[in-house]
Image 1 (tube, rainbow, N blue to C red):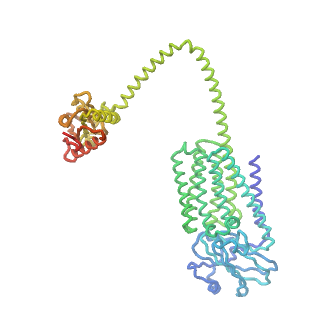
Image 2 (cartoon, one colour):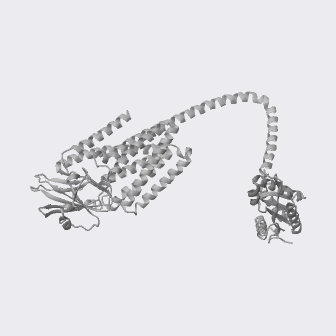
Length: 607
């Protein structure tokens, strides 16, 4: 029922628009208008009057349109004699500078300067399009118009009796009233839904609808007439500022509407980048010339609209959700209307009632379909919540019955269950010990890992501080280990690492001493209650032991050697074990820098 009502309103809107176009009035055909291109912006009206007829060109379209051009255009046409008061109307609201001259037998009758870069109050007639009042005249006059603008150059020129004009204008206002009424109703409806549901998808939908309507108001001249009539500079910028924001709101709406953030993270990142680009282009539109800003915005809009359309169809095909289908159809219709309008503005297709209203008609249908999609999404979510609540209620009842059954037999099984729980707790504790053992053991070498080292060095360092006893540390790096991997393969490299780890572990004879894998091909040995001499002796034994290892790959001996950094000292209360590690690490790098296969002592060591 609601859909039938909206389609009826759109039909009325289209019929009213067509009827308004057919009302009486004289449209000056583009093929009867002569135009002259002033590329240097130097021609004056006197120079134009002296221009040879052969330099003028006749228009080739029913309505003159030159797209975006940096040139100044002069046009001239004949104004027929009439005993009625009339208007000359240039029905395109985005022309920056217009100067109209009327001549009667080469005598200047009137000169009017206007444009959307001039305050609205200075227009000869306060109207969204450019109107030039013409009093009745018994002789034909020649009209010359100078056009300079950074926007698309379109020149729909009408000569209308004033009564006819106002009758036609009322119909056009009715058409626009229906359109903006649809926009306002949908925006308010979804804004109230947002206040009720606190779902950001409704907020982004409202922002999207409002920004698009603002651009349409700017293109049609209503915003300059009713919203900011005293801000000509902002009026010029507003369309190029708000157009990228449509993309931002549309992208964020799509992310939230189709749950892209959770289900399609790569697409979500692309849409966030697209939204950021829209914000940047919108900000640049405040400083760039309109001609550059609008091209940049149009390019982003075309790319973004196509990308949003492809994303919506991809998700529609994958999910088959009804509201995703609504979105895809809505965006397709909107994109078709926008493309028709863009081709019209760039001069690729003629300016007609349909091409000029295509974006509005497409957006009206899109807004309606998106509202249906939001309603369908809301219905689906409500249905899922109801199903979840019913399932939860059912499960609660099942659990309650089970709990009652368990309570009935619980008293007779307390002792048995207590013993079982005690056994289970013992198993859990045993398992925890095994897990802790696994979590602190390096799986390749079978020795302790870096995590265990960090815990151990902290404990032993604090013990040495309390007991005023020495603590020693070795950092051991296998020399040229990368070359071993590159030449013999990583499996042989692993064998070498295990052999070196085993050899070092075999050299440690006291229970408190421990070897750990520090990282990669680096090993660490913590030596509590060991002075520098003992640490140095162990380091040298380890170096010789590794040098003598016989590891083979396919019968070939793999030469191995280690560089060792060492330090030992009695820590004071203000010391930190990180200083010990740093000193040993520096000693290790000294050993590697001075030829490898050697032991170097860190600066923190004490005798």
